[in-house]
Length: 423
Image (cartoon, rainbow, N blue to C red; front, side, top):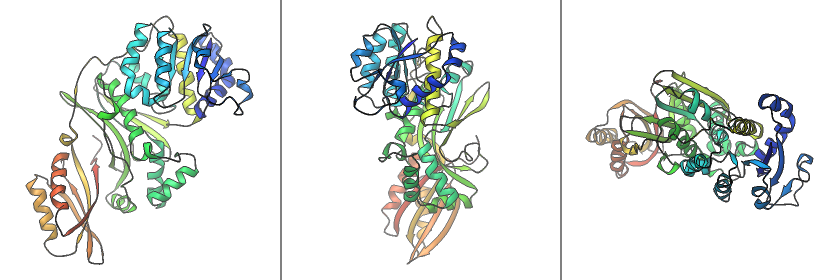
C-alpha cells in the first residue's frame, strides 16, 4: 500500500520511524505492507533521515498525481495549505489521514461529507489526545449511548504548568519557562496557555458526542495565564486542585461548550492527572462514566494514532467508513446562562463595611455565598476569597461589573469555576 506523507516535522518523522519499526506486525494485521512512497517538505536541502532517502519532494503535484498512492497522510499542521491538500486528495478518490485539529475543528463536516461523496476514508484520531484512542471509541464503541457530558484535560502544556505550580510551588512564569525547556511548550505558547488548542479539540469531541456541528469559535474559552500561586494555595486549603478543563454538556435543547480553569475536588478522577498527560471522561446514558488516559502529544504517541488510522483506512477500503454524524442542529448555550459555583479572589481596602458592600452587590444579583475568607493584609489592603453556590455566569459578570467600580476594591484578581463534587 503506497502512502504519500505531507510534512516531516516531529510527527511526520515519528510516522516514518514507526512504520519502519512495526511494518511486519502491521502487515500481519492488515494483510498489507505500508510503503511511504513520497514525502512533501518545504526545504529540500534540510538533512533528513536515511529512511526517506529518494522520497523527498517539495511539489504536492508529485504526490497527488501519483496513481499508485492511495492514502494521503497530512501532518503539516496549520489551516493552509493543509485544507486545500486534503480537499484535493478526497476529490481525487484518495483516503486521507490527518492529525490536524485546526482543519478538522473548522471544516470537519464539509470534509467528511466530501469523503462520503467520493467513497473514501477521512480519519483524524490523532487530532485529539495524541495517542489516546477517543474518536473511534466515541463513533463506534459508545455509539449505542446518548452522550450527556465530556470533560477532560486536553492540553499537556497547560497541565504540566499547573502541575509544576501545584506540586513544586512554581510561579506561572517559572513553570512556563520550565515547560519550554522540557519541550512541552512552544516558544510562542499562546495557543496552549490561552486555551485555544483545547477549544479546537473539545469542538471536535462535542460535535461527535452530541451529533451537532460545533466549531472552536463557539467554545467559551479562558486560559490559565491569570492563575497565580495564591490561587493554587487557596485551592489546596479547600481540598481542591486547579486544572484547565475542556467540557461539553448536553442540555435539553442546547449544548454547553467551554474551556476554563476549574477547581476540582482532590478526589475527582481528573485531579490526579499530572504533568503532560491528558485524560478524557465521557458519560453515556447506558455505559455511565468512562475515562481515557495517556500522553496527549509527542512524536511517537501521535504517530501511533496516525499509523493506526492508516491501517484503518486500508481495512475500510470497501466499507465501514466513519462518516459525518452531525445530523442535529442544537443551539450553543450562551456562556452567561451556564451555571456553576465560582471562586472569586479580590483585593480590597482593609476597612469596615467593604465586605458588606460586596455582599450587597452579590445579593442584588441573586448570588449566594457558600464560603468567605479574608486572607493576607498588606499595606492597608486585604485579600478576600469568596466561593459561591451554583449561579448563572451572567449574574457573576453583572455583580463584578458593579464591584469593580467601587473605590474600595483595588482589583478583582481571579474568577474560576468550581466543581464541588464529581457529577
